[in-house]
Amino acid sequence: MSTTVIILAAGKGTRMRSSLPKVLQPLAGRPLLGHVIETAQQLQADNIITIYGHGGEQVQQAFAHETVQWVEQAEQLGTGHAVQMALPVLGQDGVSIILSGDVPCISQATLEQLVEASQATGIGLVTLTLPDATGYGRIVRDNGQIQAIVEHKDASEAQRQIQEINTGIYCVSNAKLHQWLPKLSNDNAQGEYYLTDIVAMAIADGMQVASVQPERAFEVEGVNDRMQLAALEREFQSFQAKQLMQQGVHLIDPSRFDLRGSLKVGQDVRIDINVIIEGEVELGDRVEIGAGCVIKNSKIAAGTKVQPYSVFENAIVGEDVQIGPFARLRPGAVLANEVHIGNFVEVKNTQIGVGSKANHFTYLGDAEVGAGSNIGAGTITCNYDGANKFKTIIGDAAFIGSNSSLVAPVTIGNGATVGAGSVITRDVADHSLAFERSKQLSKDNYQRPQKLKK
Ligand code: UD1
Ligand code: CA
Image (cartoon, rainbow, N blue to C red):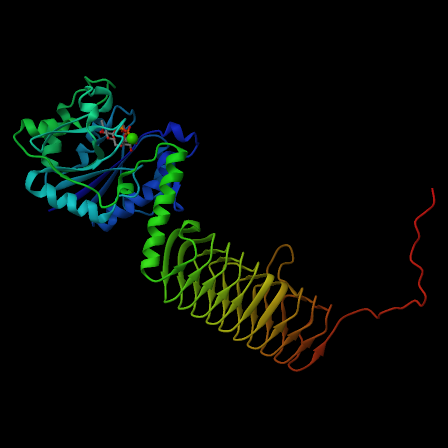
């Protein structure tokens, strides 16, 4: 049986008050529509059709790398009208799962249950029972059987007491969509073509309508304004935090942890408060991440400790490394085991060998550092002449004195020593000492300037 996912994403999202189309607003660092497309992919849908309207070009561009079929709904005449737009590209066989681009957290598991429940009936819905159902379409049942969906604005006082709501998520046979959608009318309180009217059409055709409830209520929460976006962000984050804790991660405070991507963890990983993990991150056994760190697209191996307020991006870190506080690893930082990177040290496109240390105020860019070397406080690799970048090579067991400038391209040999305060422009041979300083002058009994009398 072929499965199509149709994602409704043509709405404007006026209440976000943003120049960004609503479905591109980020939840956990990824556009709302990106979450929905990922779920559709997990379901192994044969085809994903996205109905777009507002900000179409921007939306399509954001997903240029995904296999999605784009169908325009130039005028937003209602949810039923939106699905009508897909009919010309929708086959007669199989079923369609209809989702909303602004309901990002719907899970694969709930949708699989929906598809299964709908198999016998040809139509099924995800519904939810809410204490306050104001605004939603209500599920009208008779003897337990679904009869219709009535929109809040069209509902009678008695129907408004119904607490079971339509979440806007459906599974319908494609043949039936072809049969029903052309017959929708907009004779209702909002003058819209309601997709929800297909439920009454199914009943009129003598069919039954299946329903399932989501595993978790936040799965069907929609985003219409910034308050709802922030609230859903929290629920999603707390769900992810729980999953990590179930895997054995020690989150000091799950309410102060943000995962914007995916995190793979070993055993006994400990994460202090206000840490943000972005993109794809791997943390090995016993890794500790201090408060306030931001770690993006990086791998950190077993036993490494990261002190507070360190920032990583595209870095690879070995075992038993010590980093921070206030360290910055930029793309291409590759640290071997037992390296020490201390406060206010920035490392970019640089490999550092086993056990080497740069403990204070240093910039290492476009460099290779061997094993067992010590990079003194304030050392700078001058990698950029304003137009081009050059490489600094530092061997094994080298000692770079504090406040040295290594003007690339330059090589410091194995076991070489650079005196503090040097500006090194020429290569330093293995096991030699290089220093570059003016002679120190002294004046005896020096009088400091005095404040002038006015
Ligand atoms: C809809 C349902 C309601 C349900 C609620 C759940 C109908 C008539 N009503 O109401 O029963 O309780 O969702 O949130 O379907 N869209 C388009 N084109 C349009 C109109 C909407 O693409 O012409 C998209 C929107 O961008 C959104 C989705 O469809 O992603 C739902 O539209 P929305 O206007 O939010 O529907 P509601 O009136 O809230
Ligand atoms: Ca809505």
